[in-house]
Image (tube, rainbow, N blue to C red; front, side, top):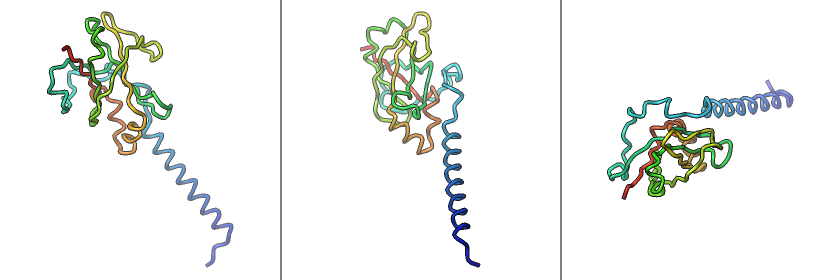
Length: 161
């Protein structure tokens, strides 16, 4: 039985629609996030120790109070905000931000938090660290995007000396 041109066209359009629908469903499912993740959602005392070169150094370690991972909004939409005690305000620049499974440390900059919907806790100041969007997309493609949303996977090392 030969298929008519109309049947071939219908099958082709159906195939394309199902493919696009499947891809859209997978994207929406993988990036679905009930807004941001905050450290109050997880007991940070239960965070496993990351194995990296900085973990063996003498540094103070902090986990973020807020993590945002929304790379589909464009550059600078994957970041974490840390609340550091005021006594470290003059030495915050001696810090390095590490994200699980990356070898490159990133720098943090001070922020008032207003643009990001955060207020500094009493006797603290806020710093923000951005994660590259292209690397975030690699996490998404490799199925590890959920790791970026977890505060335990972001560690700020502050070096006192």
